Image 1 (cartoon, helix red, strand yellow):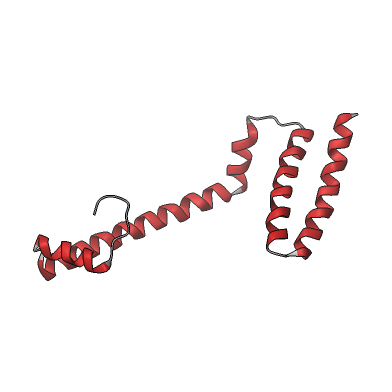
Image 2 (tube, one colour; image 1 turned 60 degrees about the horizontal axis):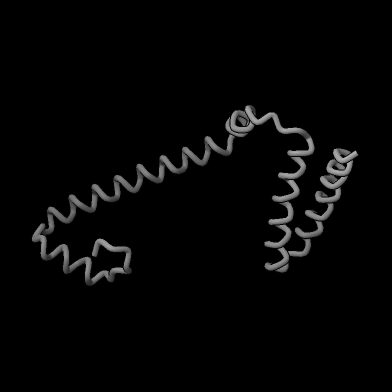
Length: 114
C-alpha cells in the first residue's frame, strides 16, 4: 500500500483493522491527521498570500535589473500562452483584450530594436 497505486476505502479499513487500533485509537489518529492537514493548508494559504503581495514581487525581481525590452519579452510570452489557452476554451472576448495588450508590448519591443 506504500507505492503510488490507488487504494480503495476497503483496503484502508482492512489495513486499519489489521493494526487493531480500536475505535479510540482510530479517533485519535483521525484528529491528528485532520490537525496536520489544517496546519498544512494554513501554511499553504499563508505562503500563497505572501507570494502574491506586491512586496514579494518587487523583492523577487529587484536583483534582476531587467530592461524595458526584457520585461516586454516576458509579458509577450505570458500573453501568447494565455492567448492559446483562451483560444482552446473559445473565450474570444479575452483573446481580444490580450490582442490589444500584445500590440502595446510589440510597440515596446520595436522601440528596443531601433
